[in-house]
Length: 556
Image (cartoon, rainbow, N blue to C red; front, side):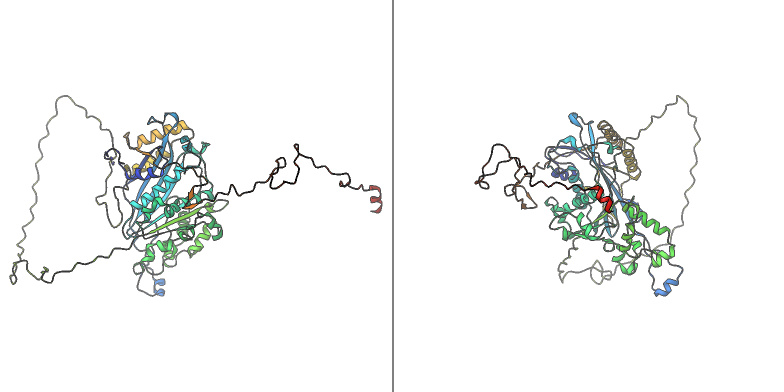
């Protein structure tokens, strides 16, 4: 368990609180709980391709000893972030807190890249207790953007590619059971959720608040795929900004981000799509990949890949007929690829010609002297340790004193011996306030999924129970006070650096019937005090001619 060190007054004990304070409303109090795990060895995300051989293609096809190559060594680190606020009038009491937001993010690392996968995000709908002004930016959206950008900055590894990946699929509740019963919860549909996530990640591209994050990378680019929609329909989900057309691409970066395509000398030049598609927990495309793997023989998969599909475009076309992407449902797959900066060139210093560089042939003493090499002597025979004689058992006499029970007051987590390895990086700034092992993390998440958030009192009780039991009753809350000034959008407010045109004085309003005309438009007309009623003369009214039914029947 990680215990936060006390910080001096006026300073933030955690770097995450300083980042969150910049984007939250001014003088508004929030409580943050950040939970994480240690880097743990996990299953590989992509299926490894066949082990390449030097034989010809015909010989490889006829060979029977084809086998997959060694999968990439993958580590997983899990993060769970919750935000709570004071509940009503008694918000000054620490126990009267209600959760409003929950985020679960997995960080997968290999020797090739880092993948930040947004697993779940959910809200309870009790944010309206803050009574924020109407035009205030949503704290849920700001916290989500800030936390993703925080992990992107603190999980950067030199010369390693980083990918933020998620799939947007709308559900009534993900993390907070019963929260759908709250009338204040606004559940987005599939289309609204995809647009919401695209705006979240687009802020990292364009917002001035995350300029320091962009400076750490050589370049970044977003990708969007919505199975079942063409490019024209998919383009409507991107943010409507001037730079969105250059920052986003309608497609997937799976071939460009795969480690197998980057090393043809090790894995060969022909990589099937089964080795390009990563599989995450509760992922719609992961279930499709598992079905394709089970329906294809092992030898066929390694030699020729799946029977169908053969390309990534065909894979997404078939995904459109899956249950998650059809029958009125829509699922969006979003990627943001961060390219690392070029490795700095090492400038070698000039070496003095008079300096003597010691080698294995030169002696460390005066020139010409020879160094005596000690000869190994005869080895001593191994000695066997003698057996220890057991002492005689003594009879215990006297009163029996019972042993006091030992209560478990803290989590015993085995930290990794190394913080920086070729497979993962575990800096202290990116860790949670409480660090658990894999089993402890599962218990904490399972406890939250068995609570109730249907009413405010239930949410307060569930929040108190979860925050208490996760850390064995010890306080692990992070208090955050917002610093962003609450500015309402007016006609003089500028958006993205460009002034807003005020058209309220140039728009001509349609005049009502009972409203008197202005002098400029009806100076020659006489205005009566009472509205006039238009009447039609008798000659203008056209009556419908009667048809003689008797003659009509006769002629018929």
